[in-house]
Amino acid sequence: MTTTAEWPAGYRINPRVNTLDPSLVEAFRQVPVAVAGDCLGRCIGARGLRAYHGDPSLKLCGPAFTVRVRPGDNLMVHKALMMVQPGDILVVDGGGDTSQAVIGGLVRTTALRVQLGGIVIDGAVRDLEELAEGIVPIFAAGHTHRGPSKEGPGEINVPIACAGLAVLPGDLVLGDADGVLAVRAEEVAALLPRTQAHLAREASIRKTNEAGTADPERFDALLRAKGLPL
Image (cartoon, rainbow, N blue to C red; front, side, top):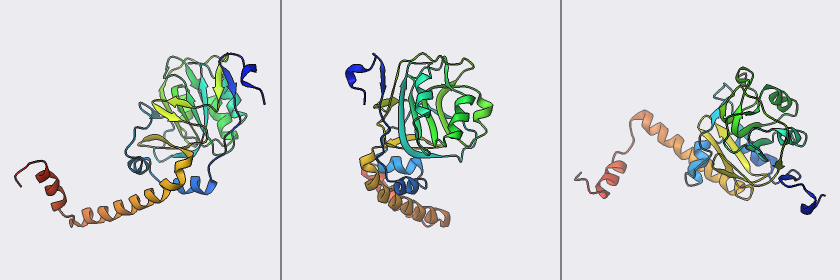
């Protein structure tokens, strides 16, 4: 493996991090982002990203394969696509720049071939009609017709910040119509039963709401605690 001293300035390519049990990843496919977020203390997920894949029911769930690029450059994105495994989520720190697209229809074609689980980019995309065909969930900060350069520098499988979301290689990344968040790999196993209990509790509340049998005292008690004379 190349030592740190041998990498040119601004470049780094680390091997893929394999830390998640596939059975855990599969189980989290049934967990909405909102539920995972509630169970994580309603932490802040990625900010300002929108879905570009057209189908709002399309979700992403898989291990993070992280990339940091120079804004508007996708050289390291292409290298990353040579290294990913099926189901990986490509998470790209593009610095939030939307003046040049980092990902477009051609990258999507490659993503389909390597069976990528999805793309999250704090940067721009283009070729929206192709992206909107679905199949690969793609979240991005914006879009533009201007294409990328392929000059570098960039880094692969390093800690990144993507739209305000801290992501480590191998973290579990979840995305749906509500947004995108990342779960530390070492926290995934403990989080799963909490999300399942939360889903069961919501199902129970939903039934009482539908039947009109919810206890109003719950909310009146909260209001009285704030000083309202109820």
